[in-house]
Structure formats: structure tokens, C-alpha cells
Length: 107
Length: 234
Image (cartoon, rainbow over all chains, first blue to last red; front, side, top):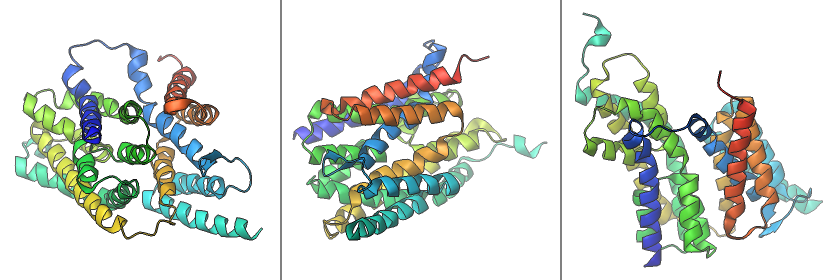
């Protein structure tokens, strides 16, 4: 029951965000830095999610050479940069993870 | 009469939107499958998982929410993180606002609900092209509804197939990979790279903080860094 409420509130907040400027842009004067800062929101938020996820294994921080996720993540960043292709990036990252896992398992 | 001045019919605009959205679905459908599978892996019930796709309707935040629900994260943090992850939509909202200004409130509400990353990307391109803008919201509607239907169907498939996927598959790793695929091509200037790198490093340093507050701190410091590197507008 609580979960339904969480989803409803999260959904309303998301919808409110999407509706915000469509309704308000011509009614409120927003400061320039605020509007310029919005541009950095997706890259800042998502990057702050990406690196900790790559660096965490079994709920503990692992920045050593034994963490295959770091290598697979680095390769995925390279593929994303070169190809700009979502599917290819995910595929390359998953294959790399399995390969590095196998290699590190042998070493 | 100039051809570009001819008003384009509503139906034609709508189907143009559907057609232009189609190639993007190739990337969206697997993402929906992954969400459905992850939601079931996090012990979320089938109706709730499907409702997340229709009520929240924002892939990245849904995947994070599913993971947090599975990990037993507190309710307030889940809501706050979904809100923050979806803040980028405010930028899309600001960007399309001048184009939908002439529409009725019902239209604005409907189009705001459909304002996802993928619908926005296609629609804003169309708004910036030549042609009579009077019926371009029908294009927005076509692109948005196409994406919506694909998201609902792929979620349902993920829910169905997800139960049969082996637990040992490192499906969790798809999340950072998907974000890498979205973020990296969007980094086009020094300020953007600075914002991303700073946020990533601060996110790592603040990993020990409770309730995922490190994510929020990292995001705000990243945004500030981006603004500082960009400098004042000329």
C-alpha cells in the first residue's frame, strides 16, 4: 500500500517537473544562472550515479584491479564516445564485464 | 505560395511524429525489458511494476527506484531521488514552453505527461525546422504516444520474461551502462565534462553518507562546477 503511494507521489513530482516551465515560463522571471544550471542537471546526476555503481561490488567499495566493473565501465565510456549508440554501449559493456570477470577469475 | 507556409494537417503531423520516433524505439524497448526484469528481481509485484511505467514514466528513475525498493531504502529517499533524477525534464519543459504557449491547458497537461527524453529529442528538432507551427503539437503527440506505448509493452514483456532470467546474470550492471550511453554523447563542451567528472568524483567520495544524500550533494557540486567553468554569459 505504501509502495503505491510512493509511486503516485514520485509520478506526480515527475509530471510536475515536466509541466513546470510549460505553465510558468511566461509568468515568473527566473535568474539566469538558474536556467543555465539546468543544462548540467542530467550529466551531473547520472555521473554521480555511474561511478559509485562501477566502484561498488557486493555493497563494498572496490577501487582495485580486481574489480572488473571498472574496466568494463571504461570500455563502455569509450564505445559510447565513439559510436553514440545506446545498444552497442550496453552490449560492449556487458560482454566486457563477463570477459574481465573470467580473466580476473583465472589470475 | 511558399510550400513551407502551407498549414500541415493534424493527421499528417501526427503520423510524421510516429514515423520519426520509430528508430528511437530500438533503444527504448530493451530498456523497458530491463526495467521490467529488474522490478521483478527487486520483488516488486506485477501491477506495481507496470504502474511505475505509466505513473512515473521515466526509465532511469524507475530503474533506480526499483533497486532502492529492493534494497529497502526509506520511502522519502526514494521519492526525493526520483524527483532529483527527473529534474532534467524541467529543462525540456523550459525548452518546449514557447512552442506550446498557444495551446489549451488540457493540451499542455497531456504533452507534459509525454515529455520524455526520447520524445523531447525528436519533437524539439521538428519545432526548430521550417513549416507552419500551428499543428506541430500533433507531431509531439504522435512521437510521445508512440514512445508511451512502446514503454508500456516492453515493461510488460520484461515483467513476463524477467521471472525466467537466471539470478546470476549481472543485470544490475546494465544501469550504469545505460547511463554511460546517455551521458557520454551529451558531453560536448568543457563545462559539461567538468560537471560530469566533478559529480562522479564527489559521488564516490560521499558514498558513505546515509540515505543516498551523497548523490544529491555530488549533483549540486557538479552543476555548480559546470556553471563556474562556463563562466558568465557574454
